[in-house]
Image (cartoon, rainbow, N blue to C red; front, side, top):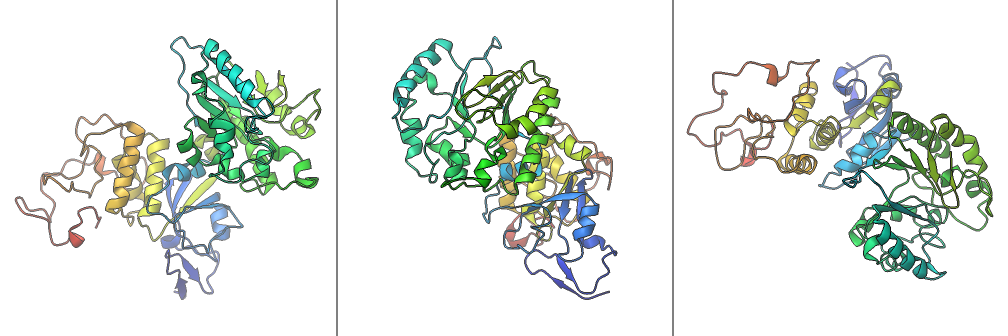
Length: 469
């Protein structure tokens, strides 16, 4: 056996003189969903080509202190070094390649009314306040469901940060009519890219004004609105920016970003069965206005829209006529880099299974545990997963989603951590790997270390019943 150095942070091995064709199963990731999701650590030197042959295209690093990874070889994202795990952020990265979908409730009669506005963030000047007043009157008559903003939300150069007072001066304190207190679904314009572009995307702004929803590209399921980030398509902003500086964080490399965006949009439009398909972006495809046509959109976007019979496009100047399964088809797989199988990576994968597969916590945990037996959960992480489960499914009965190996802290009771018989959650089908404990016949004897009428056993480390053995 050749000697190896071991990363002191996450445990992945750095081989010395190891034949690149050899495979050490202990270091290779475990297939959680074989066509999509893997979990494990990996060797820094010898596994690059091997991972690629397995179809790994993205790496989610759950170990912030270990950056000795393949940043330049894969689409890469590292979670922040925080005790609170960002489940939604991680899940969004795992399903990168599919546009995020937002749901908006519809009226009882199925009707939909909305307003569209663009080029508006003027701190009340240039007639912004007067227009806002009239918008409030019209919105009240129409009983609108929401507002769409087509970009250039804040002039002249976007926001300087999440604490920029322009957000409230140009938005919250301008559109004050009761009828406008609805969700504002917004995309970015070229002026927004001249500031701190990530400030407008930051959910912290929703704490200042809960109406604000801004992302690069996304879908609102009500009527199937497809929002696209059109600014990165325009060559001028990259090659002839004049005196302007653009914040291209999250966009570079540009070619890869645009290719992925177009692919995502095409997939979403093909998948949609909506009677109306409405695309929203900042730049017009064709226009008789001052700026004229957007040739890059004519060349790259218009063919997709024409092919898929888009019903309507909303943009800044002119109104014109005009999922994981896909990842599996394209063999785009993702590796969640773990810290010797500890809680962070395990929790992210479990959260993903709960949200994407609509499984309960206990089922998701068991699915992963059978494929990578070494993984463990701590009490703190387990509680975060319980809260995430409650966020997805609503409040649940205590004890109905206990992970095998976790006993309730109080009050003491005879419980082996399995769901109640009347638990309505549907069990996943365990078709591979070790047979599921859910498929085994019930034991007619107590576990070897269980004593009726006794307190906790000595093997419970520091009295913590939430640590798995």
